[in-house]
Length: 141
Image (cartoon, one colour):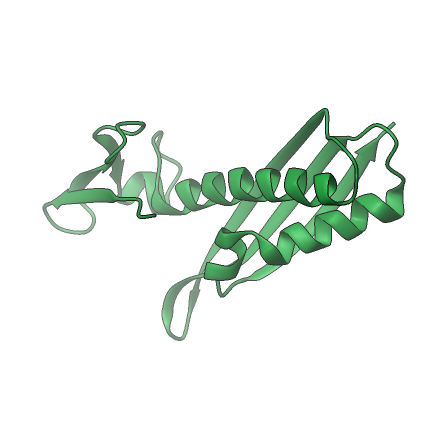
């Protein structure tokens, strides 16, 4: 299985701008710039897209782990916060924090945390990132 995305950048770093697209068409010519990446200008940036990918991957992985433990999630909501910092090596994604809330009938906190921790280390996006990954996982009653 292969997935593809592309980016086009025009101009210099600060005054230029670019677009990102996916082969599937889910994202088409999504605009980004220095301002959307390093300042608070409206728009997206690569780190935000990594956060979205990680949140989606983790939510599916947690559902799978819960299923293997004999539970079926009614819902899993994940927010991933990616931290981009300037280090000696240059700008680096240094950490990702996953904030998870799930409704899982019949699951107790221990079973939920076990499944969440397996999903945190096992989802493919977690495995590709070299950043520290932390998590807060809440099981709703």
